[in-house]
Length: 436
Image: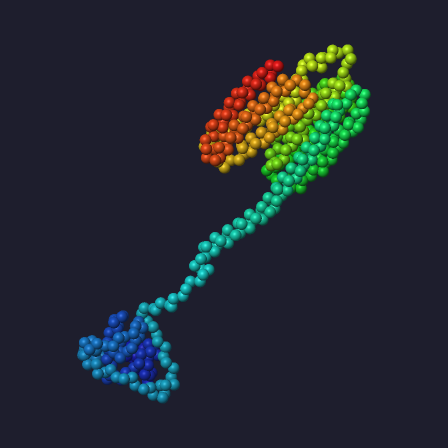
């Protein structure tokens, strides 16, 4: 059986091409071989491509030897190279044999990496960011909007309660101007109306969603409304029967209720909501006390009997407010010192400046009420109490200035030093007040 002259595969009679490697078979007497310059294997000298590695073969140099397969001798006779013979008609119809590539594989043609593969990590990161933004927006819409609605409702509620308290105080003022025997029933009914209005507001106060951060404030709001109704209950009892033997105790109860309500109101930290206006009954108590004094005046008493203790009882409600403010300022200063033990400054902190500003506004309102209170006749004591409120304002201003300076990158100590000087002045004035 004949074998391929290149790869040694068996051939059929009449085959001019090897079915295994595709090499053309030459007549036995014309077989000459050369070495492939790429893979080093023997191949026909007239081959255009190496059937083993596929490399294109350059033309043979004149000094390149050829080997006679029959004799195995090397010669430089290149006369075997002939022009390609024409295919016989039978060969023209035969399909060209497939070239079997052996040896080194050829690399595939270059293909550009798709866009989504090249930027896969960037695309994934962008998708994650978009999802986080969407989740944050949805969370703010549902939680932030509910929180904003609650704050708006709380501010509106504080304004309604403040308006009722202002109307009740105005009624007490008109009572204090009534002489003995004048009809006061209509004014008492006005006080009862204020009380019913607050009760109605309290009953209708049913917020749907209370944010967790305002849960404690919501409880304090309900307590303030109960305090306000208790204040009006006592005020109505005093107005209905100013000659009661226990009227002095009722006036004391009224002042205690006012201070309790203020203390509860000051714990509410909802932005823009001032619930102290709902229970600010210092003027209410002063007007009712003057009304009681007018209605129960005894003819046998000396004209100056009402001033044996000049206005100190009337001013006691203001003095109680002064003490409450002093406690609040002390707590604020203590919290600031505790904060400084773990932090070098107040950058990024807004709590203390907000608390200081709220306290300053509350003291300013009380001080303004004291200045406009026409029921106080002893101006000397009034001025002493006003000086105490002024010292408290200066203490708050010092704390506020120190914290604000630190938030701007400046030294907080100058502001705190001014606050300490105001505190020393307050202690001195307060000792003088307590000795009166």
